[in-house]
Image 1 (spheres, rainbow over the protein chains, first blue to last red):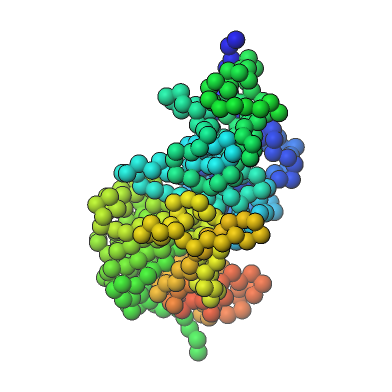
Image 2: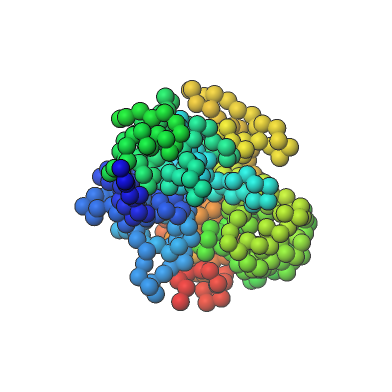
Length: 214
Length: 236
């Protein structure tokens, strides 16, 4: 049977579908930023940015950029009415203190039990940089990962054990990919959904790990 | 009369010594005290340890200090940028030491120093490469209520350079939008804090309910005209 991968926007929409009304959410740099575009306007969701913003709004109109008002990716943003500014220690207290409902991050690898590797390839010449990834990964009530299931070489990024340096242990609850949505549990991977036409057997073959149906 | 306003950046930074630990505020384009960094370069202190979120961009600011060989060590969370080539080169050739710290641990270690806390146990980084000392040995860990934590030490500084928006002669400060970032906590953690402001106001003009950094944490304030600020305010 044939199946089609979710596009980047379809994947972002799939993540947005699971963000409930009233949630406080941090969207990581890169692909997770797209999720904001797919949250229905009828749903009130508060976006947090690590550099001290709660109630972050969309990008400003061209010419309206204010470089004192930027997101974690250093891009100009806006503030919604009711939004607030605060310093870095308060911003990270919001993560570490368990006040954020959801964070959505990218990943190099995620293990079946929810270990996350997303900050460093560990190659000898690589310049390591971690930013807020470790604080977010262990701090939010739920950490979700958004990524392509397979590398360009066709290897699964969902693995038995991460080979890249870890960002956090057992912190990922859910992984949204271009082919399927899965939950990481202490007992291993549970399949929440797959793209139409992709069977559980085929998904299990691609990942190379046993899967449970939800 | 207490008056923390000084007439120039060079006067504010004149007593900076070789080997000093210097915290520098800023995140992205917001809150970088460009004039104070330029002043530190002109002042000439060397063998510095810098504490910042990043490790410099292109060849300005922090990168200029690095390029001039004035920095021994940098403590930061995110050195790698598309234009961090000055740091990248020095790091790869072993000419600058890096202490990489998760951003929240960096903020809390700075806050702890300012609050007189002798360190703290944090879940961030547990079980990772960043829960190790520079020599590779494991940092102290402890299980608290069934969760694992890593012990992190405060980061004290000799000098903090921060960019605020508005200040009075007692050193009370407010900030502008996300330019606040590390400013308030760095001001607390340094023996001497120098702040730039775009607006100088008389005592009583700042609403006491909205003062963000009380003047006790600030030793010198320099007024910088908004037009002269590269990163400050609204960029045309």
